[in-house]
Image (cartoon, rainbow, N blue to C red; front, side, top):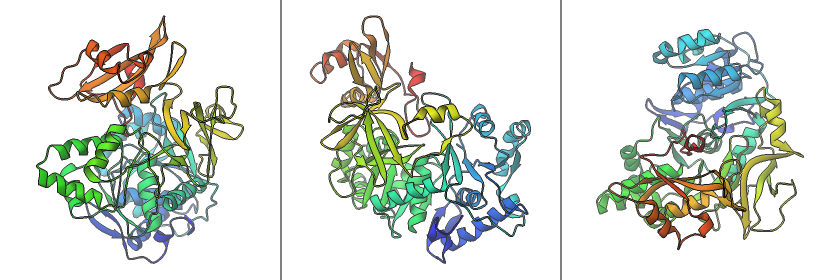
Length: 491
């Protein structure tokens, strides 16, 4: 990769870049390893010519080496979910034409059959590092760098092609907006096949010369120990992590809880994203730690497009305003720009941060752009200049009795009930209403709740037409790796 990308990696820099299970690694050390890996991939080809190279690696030095090594060699990196089932892996690998896959030797036994079937060379990091190569390509910013897959919450995951230019735009926008510096230290426990972990945390930190603590899994005791000792200056998580932290803190004795809360309070920034942060979670986190969560909005195809401000008011229940370099506009169902506040419309975006295409799917690519605008499929309103997400047009907007209802809004109210720990709302077919509001909830330990009691409780908190007409109690809600509820499975 050219030096204009990730300058702190490619310059002489003895600062610690990564901390993983094997120890600390400086920028110089990872740069040398990335270079060696890239040359091992290229061998005598000089340029991978956008070959799709997949890797199935935990958060580690190996992961960072593979990601940047593939980029430098002129390939397209395809990071995969280490928790994927075989059928999911088959879809990912076959749909984008992967030719080589990197995985630890201990996983080769379960991967051999699938890779042989798809004619994919299965390699270890050491095998690539042992290869000899001398020349690496000079890369245009317009070249594709990476394929990530959509979350698949509404349909089969699509391969999203992201260029070097888009990665740079996404990273530099956030570095400026969230005031990253080389003094920052951040834990990374989020899945590294998703834009949140790859761009918002790992790439922003490495671009800034900061330090990342790589964690294959979220470990509550270890994390809280590090929080008390002021190891981190920045913390980014999904709402389910904040819920788990709040439950953990409330179960500790006062002295332990206070020490952890004060540790969070001393950080310069706490961010929540990848799913809507319930207002009660936002408020409880502020009450416990003093931190006002910065909520933002993005997706695989655009990185981050909207954010609450670093300096200024961060509003509970709102994702903020367009980030610099990103143009955001709401459009109605007739493709007309929404000009009045509090009028719902689909979020559409323009900017250098946008993806190039869905891999080998020109129809889907064409359908997602209108007059140069990327159509997000998410419905929002603007209130006093701040954007509030109502939900996805296909599943979170419920058309009931002539009203357009936001499932996210109703979920937010339900989550304020003292007996409800989780809630998901969907619309189900109804002869009278067109769609009826159905609520799926999980109860706190020992709690009981019947439909009549819930309806009575809702009557003073939401309009009658928003009150769920059906209630289903579950042990847990189905979620994907980023904590988003997979609502099609509820339907």
